[in-house]
Length: 277
Figure 1 (cartoon, helix red, strand yellow):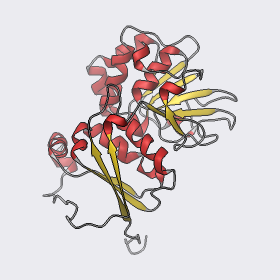
Figure 2: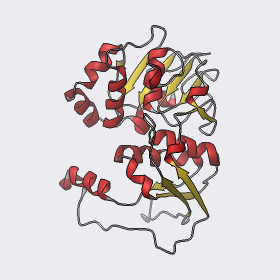
Figure 3: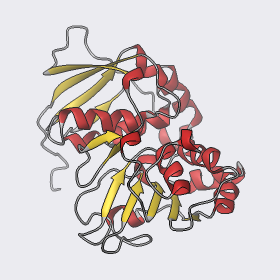
C-alpha cells in the first residue's frame, strides 16, 4: 500500500486446446465444470489457464467470461482467451471514454511458449454437466442426476448473470411455470444487463413463469441474503462454488450448473435437462 507495488510470482501456463462444436444447450459453464472435474480443484494451482484452438470460436464473449470467472475454482491465477474478432467487436461496443483511456496493445502467446501441461478437449464430447456437493470438481452428467429433487434454483451471479444467460433462461421458461415446490431466483449480473433484459421483454417472461427477479447482488451465492438455504434444502445454482454452508445451513446442498440445466430444473422440480420440457 505504501509503495503502490504488489509482488506476484509469474505463473506457469496450462494450454487447453479446444476443437469441435458444442451440442445443443451445452455452454461454456459445462466446459469449465468439465475441466475442473478432470483436473481437480487444485489441478491448476498458481497457474494460468490459456485457452486456444479452433474451438474457441464456439464460445461467445459472455461464455468466455464465464469460463475465465471459474478458472480460480481449479486453483488457477487466471484464465486467458486469445484476442480475436469476438474480442475486438466486444471492445468496440463498450463506451470508449469510460473503458479505453488510450490505445491498447494486443498480446499473443509466443510460438515457442512452454507449457506445464497441454489438455486437448473436443467440445462435442462435453455434456450438460453439474457439480454435486460439496466441490466444483465433483462433476457428473446432468442426465445421471434426474432423481435429485430440489427446493430452489438460482440463475445469475458474476458467473452466469450476463445478458446471454438471462436470454437463455427466458427462452426455456417461455410458456412454462416454475414447479410449485421450487423457488427460482434470477439475478442479473449488472444494472445494465437488468435494463437490457427488461427492454427485451425477458424479465416479463421470467415473471410470468413465477421467478423472483432481483436487482444485481451477490445475495444467495455466499449465503448473504435472498434464498439463503435452510437445513436439508437443495439448490441448483449457476454460481461458482458449492462448498459446505456456502448458501446457508451447513446441512444444505448446492449443485452447480449452467443456465439451461438450472432453468429446466426449476420447471421440473428436480435436476433436469431442457430436452425434457
